[in-house]
Image 1 (cartoon, rainbow, N blue to C red):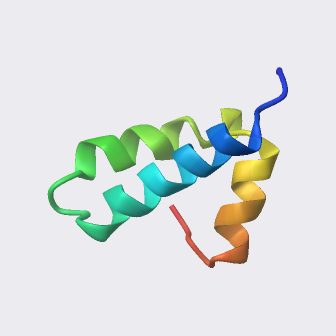
Image 2: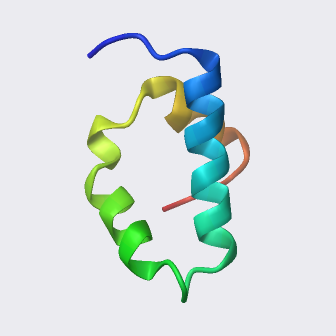
Length: 55
């Protein structure tokens, strides 16, 4: 897996937070993210864990 820039990580993090703000509206997208969590960059996983965001 390639390296991700901090800007890419931040963008993905913000997208996930936005989706989780309205889980009923974005349930399909949230479920897709849950399926792909194994492929998520380590930096993004750490950032989500630090904020106690659980998918």
